[in-house]
Length: 193
Image (cartoon, rainbow, N blue to C red; front, side):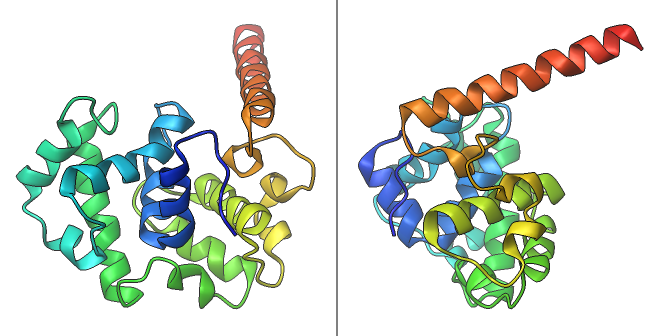
């Protein structure tokens, strides 16, 4: 299966075949537009001239990697911090999953186990782990026992809560409208309380 996020076709292909790239994209998905976060692993490949292995990223000179992340256009709003997180993530993939990011989910026997593995990654936490699980389940067919329940609301069929539900510009707009509504409700609650 291939992702069909509203980003470059080559970026979708990379994310669909390379578990590390997909984990990096999800890690980067904070305080930047979704298209930026999920397109950045492909941009990193272009800057390096090849697809990096987990071990290569883990062993990369930290300053040189930060410079790659910071090149214009930067791969993230906070390129140096995210380059450091990318190295931490790559180290975990190299050390625990034999360098194969997809082994994180292909070796998980339950949704709870997968959620817990994802939640302990740098830059993840419970909510991002649930969103990643929903993305894997809904768009890539990764469905260990209990995945929908472990993914919480993000696993709901027919929802438009997160990147897990984005397959085109229409669904992207629906997710953005949902997020805008949630932000408005939080502001109203804060003002009332």
